[in-house]
Amino acid sequence: DTGVSQDPRHKITKRGQNVTFRCDPISEHNRLYWYRQTLGQGPEFLTYFQNEAQLEKSRLLSDRFSAERPKGSFSTLEIQRTEQGDSAMYLCASSSDRGATGELFFGEGSRLTVL
Amino acid sequence: TQLLEQSPQFLSIQEGENLTVYCNSSSVFSSLQWYRQEPGEGPVLLVTVVTGGEVKKLKRLTFQFGDARKDSSLHITAAQPGDTGLYLCAGAMETSGSRLTFGEGTQLTVNP
Image 1: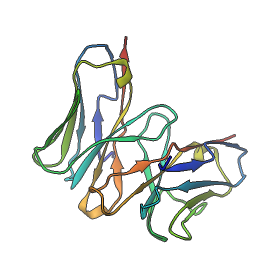
Image 2: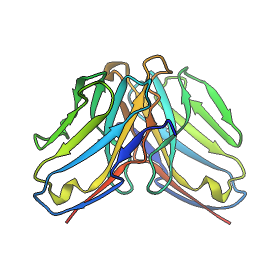
Image 3: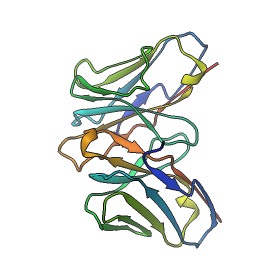
Image 4: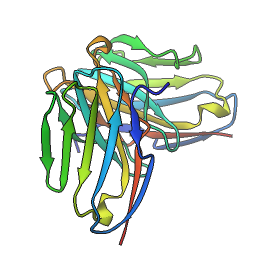
């Protein structure tokens, strides 16, 4: 399978704990995105990398959130001191700048539940 | 304020019926995509439209991009239970780089 993979698929944690999600994009894609989606809503943009550079961050990304893509391949999204409002599906997507404008290929998501 | 407004939010129909889902905005998009998402999964790209007035067909699905590139529609002919899912439109603006902005989605249920 050469699609976007995310790990873990599900995470249940207690309020105040830190969590980290990993995303492995399609290997030839140089762009990587993180989105957050709550039940019944569309995905909301969080941040975007081109290669290892984080080029854009949403105002939704508070200082408790940090994302990295150290070698321009896989990426991690860490949430510190989790709050109940952080409960959501965290989606990773990748794209190639040689593809049609804006086409994203999504992973299956990491569902976070904060108790 | 939602940049992309989708309507209806929920749609429940019987197998064999036709339906249309709308995606509207006051902003101009350089391209617009439609995705379908099933529960517990990530969205899957259905189509990309780029040119104002463009019409694309994918089997029983017909996608249209408005002449002014501010709106789009998805029409499904003879819906089947396998069409059930969350349909999302997403637009790319020239000023937003590679970032896609998603609508809130239309939850379609096709009953056998």
